[in-house]
Image: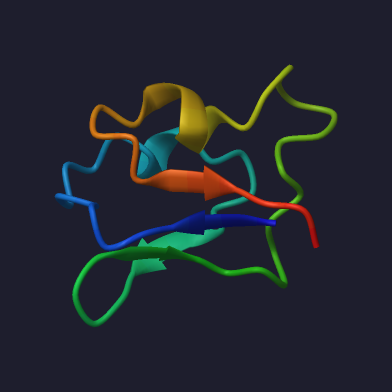
Length: 63
């Protein structure tokens, strides 16, 4: 599972990188819609939101 944590600074870097448009603005920072997220499988070698985040606010966890 991939989540955006509270360290997010809303820089907008991750939004255009998501191939399935699973990232939206939440109440305080960007959030990943888990129902849509495919963890970039079939698109990139690693999740693109994780790769482009300048403040390490994207966490990849085991389900």
